[in-house]
Length: 209
Image 1 (spheres, one colour):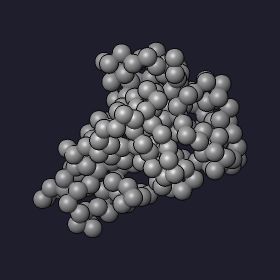
Image 2 (tube, helix red, strand yellow):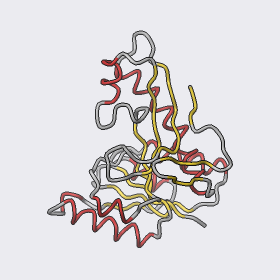
Image 3 (tube, one colour):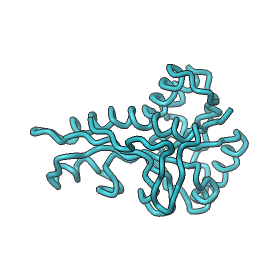
Image 4 (cartoon, one colour):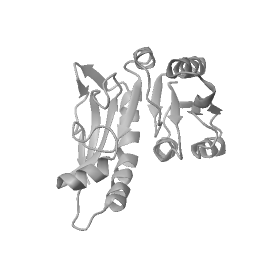
């Protein structure tokens, strides 16, 4: 049975969404563990409530990003992860970490990539005056938010939207597409071709909400 390890820094709402869908649909998967980079991450409580092993690899105890990532790799490998899911993990990962988990490390970004990579996506979308915004699930590569796109959700930018209202709708969209992308991976339906992801058998990799 395939296993998932999730990395979080906060409440891990996307992690929670994935677990709840997996339970509802009775996925054949093991949630091998959740790892947070500090003890205050609220998602640890949800993991424990579901009987999912919860771990802390405290980044403040490591003198460098390289040292921290080496400790993360050791823990994830010990848990036997087939897939590593980033769910609000607020640490910049080193190239060595990304290479180690190449092809089995995914992230969700609150924008319709390649638009608005990086931070403050909702504010930037509003300032740009776009009519659509959204979220993207992608494989992680060494380029920031540049990895092959697995799926996206588009939400309209409404008259009167502010950062808070737009953010809430995008987060709801994230909770729909992240479980979908994870299930596709677990079912062996994803093929990386250059910087593109082919879904077999084909179906839409973009949903409009």
